[in-house]
Length: 93
Image 1 (cartoon, one colour):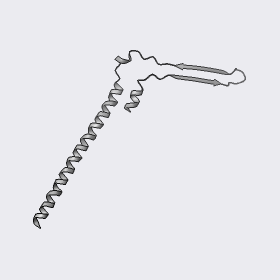
Image 2 (cartoon, helix red, strand yellow):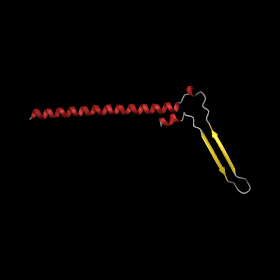
Image 3 (tube, helix red, strand yellow):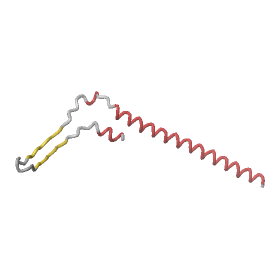
Image 4 (cartoon, one colour):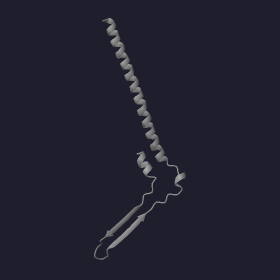
């Protein structure tokens, strides 16, 4: 979504060509159209949509990293408990 929002900032030229075959009372028609969006002062424009999408990407990345840290801590705790359990079993034996 962030890449799509960023792509919206780029100029998008369009060309349209049409041919219409009309009824016997009218002659056939051909048309050509070109559309060029004019983007004035592009450097100074605020793009709230792009900023919001980039913020969402950054938030998702931060949440993923936090989840990874939390799971790594849980795994370290489990390994310590397992190691302690093995040591206790060795002492009992």
